[in-house]
Image 1 (spheres, rainbow, N blue to C red):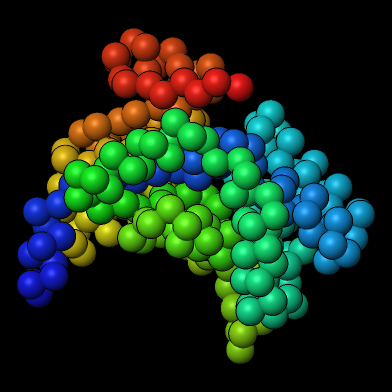
Image 2 (cartoon, rainbow, N blue to C red):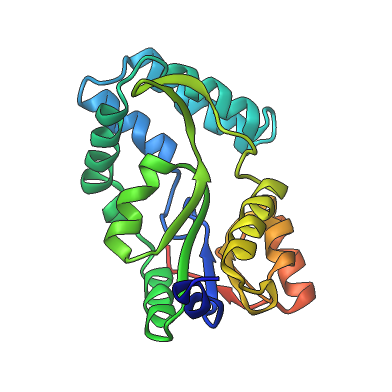
Length: 227
């Protein structure tokens, strides 16, 4: 283990979900709207992206199906071009939708010297500006498949969602020598229950109805932001 790893092993890791946790709303929907406004996405493709998010939210399609469909809309797009789109999306839309209560909690973890990690189903390129703006150290997220700098469609397994988030987090914690019992995780969604159960310090943020019931039963801390 290197000296830097020894240092990290003494730190507490704080994981944060993105959509409906740090960011109010869904980043994929914002991407569709902003890309359409700037002529980068056809009206039909924008409608499909938004509609698939709706279908996922009401449990008609799975996250995997939604990701597979969305990734195919990006097939053929240049990797750098997509990164530029994601940065523009952040500057024009997402940066204005950060939850102030969660941002304050992020600052508290930073002041405590904790290691901050975005743990999200959001695509890596979309999350990178958030990492840079808020001072996170790492991202564990879904990643698209590329060939020679061009998006192929599809994503790298395992999907960073549900139990998959625990898999990604386990690999990270093992590589750094950190302990789950010392870690925090912030999320709004019942889909993140496996990860919330894995850490020693689960915190729910404006939880959905299912997660709220569980959090209240288990006396988990909660952040409730004003609408």
